[in-house]
Length: 171
Image (tube, rainbow, N blue to C red; front, side, top):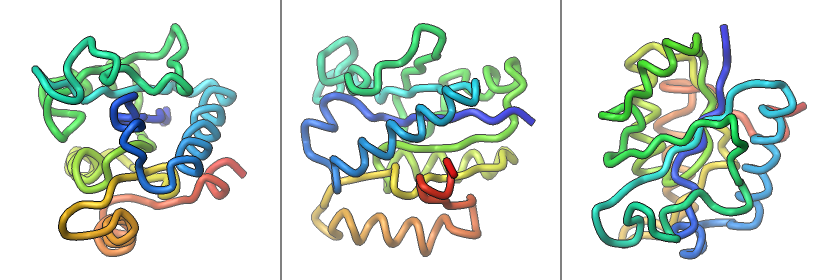
């Protein structure tokens, strides 16, 4: 069983909007990425891509956040939907590479992380979510903390994925 880390939508434009616990979030993301790199396990990046707007393709905002700089051997997929699997070729890539187990980190909990988690579950991938390396923003209905607490504790945990903290993952 080959594991891979999937880094979802940690892009310049989203980080500029100051996600919840930004400093802790980015610190944890770096630790998880380094953990996978040191174990010689694949690190795969996703960028949300829009025809216009904040994450317009090829814009500065669209780029993977500069502090996370993908290595030259790391793959970057572009996506147009909340699912990393829809119209990206990702499922086929996983099969070609023999990747059978996934770990997700990234943004935003209530959109791309949630949908991708549920699709990975439906496709039968054992999945770990690193709960302190996932972030989001306040919205008109819930604070970022409320959203994260809701998804991690009520939706994902023990239903769709195993949840771990950065510390528990890299110990």
